[in-house]
Image 1 (cartoon, rainbow, N blue to C red):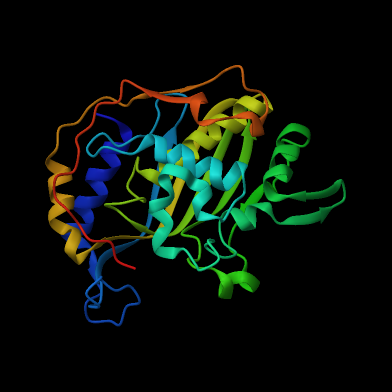
Image 2: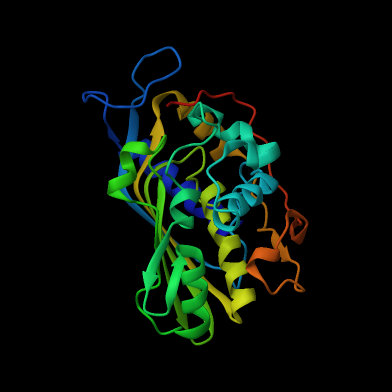
Length: 281
């Protein structure tokens, strides 16, 4: 049983048993039929994954590894907000696509914005790489996508909005902060968001000369939507498998040289979700 599976079962059980139901309150999300999408929520889930021991991929429910890689490269490498540039994974973002083909000034747009530093004008990704290579003891290695002045022009304010980076004893660590997360979908332990940043830690460690350390994932508001309860219960009953292994092409030493072919998830056993569920917007 993987660490990701353990967290999922613990968190889902806690939500179903002791979670706070917001049905008495006005909520923003709506189901496709226009009715309010209420949740059972908990305050602040914290998960710690030692990436040197295993890769955090949920086995209780199959995760779309290739889609995760595409989105990661789209945001962090291409720094794009153009939906069509996601290729085969573009459908994931169609719900937030605007008439100009973008999702507004969010995610990749924020990563690509340049700022002035004493050592030059860099965007957030290049600044992080510079600090990791040249000032590994810096306590200001922070990447944020939460920009108040641009919130009005974001089709979706970022859920995963900030990461803090640390180098200790030759290992690269990351604290990931997520304001809101659906336990059935992207914010599941070992789900889309966890996997995306675990891969990113591996990438940056490789190109900056470190070993991988810990990924700490903090989800401020972790929840189950009212129409997802049955699906979550199904996932909890699925068989558990050992964690898979991430393969990263060891020949790549430049962050911008990675392609989709340089990633592989080996020995991944999992169970597909059979219960269909709606997506609230």
